[in-house]
Length: 285
Ligand SMILES: Nc1nc(=O)c2c([nH]1)NC[C@@H]1CN(c3ccc(C(=O)N[C@@H](CCC(=O)O)C(=O)O)cc3)C=[N+]21
Image (tube, rainbow, N blue to C red; front, side, top):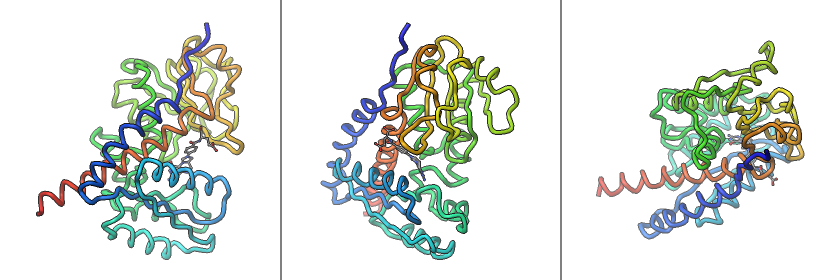
């Protein structure tokens, strides 16, 4: 049987439609939700992603402030920029695009983002809260995966979810979020032995390795739900789509799957943050 195509574009469009109304309501109160994006260096695909994020903001009436720093930027210079954004009341969310050039301490830069503005869920505090199940802003790609799962009513409780990848803003937090929804979670990574055998036991497969077409259809159980969070050069996912299509019960395409929803989650969490500012202003006036 042909799998259900999990249409991320459609999910993202619905999320963004609902945000438009919230953005106009905020603007009536004099608050323009604003996301600051920080890009260091001149990696062309990072530039494309950051542009897409800024454009998506403007399309729904939000503001985006784009900060582009040269590749020679030092860790302390980057920290200073982040601290300025932290104390700027007009900025409701900060996104530091990963990866930064190798000489920069990326973890230190992520940690410098204040928790109120960590709409991209990159701080250890944000991760810890998300893991405990009360985090306000989970990382955007994990949030997107959960959003797609919910939109299509994929059942999670008691299911075996196999996550391939354990990065701090993708594999690790999505593993925790699935665990919090009562899945049985296996997190695989580059040291995992018998990967194919583990994947073959999965009801839900989340691919987050960053290796093009890595997950093969032969590994996958008939009827499994496959979510491809991989982004590789040339818009190629981590899932070998054609072979997995034959086996899957449901599958996200690339492009048009997890990616667009990731951006809509970033916008949503920035609007959430702006609404909290509005609440605080109301209380203090
Ligand atoms: N701090 C940080 N947070 C991130 O969330 C983050 C990051 N760094 N670094 C890079 C990755 C990558 N990422 C993507 C988001 C959307 C698409 C996306 O929308 N892609 C479209 C196609 C893109 C195109 O049309 O060119 C699609 O899949 O349909 C892709 C990739 C967010 N990331």
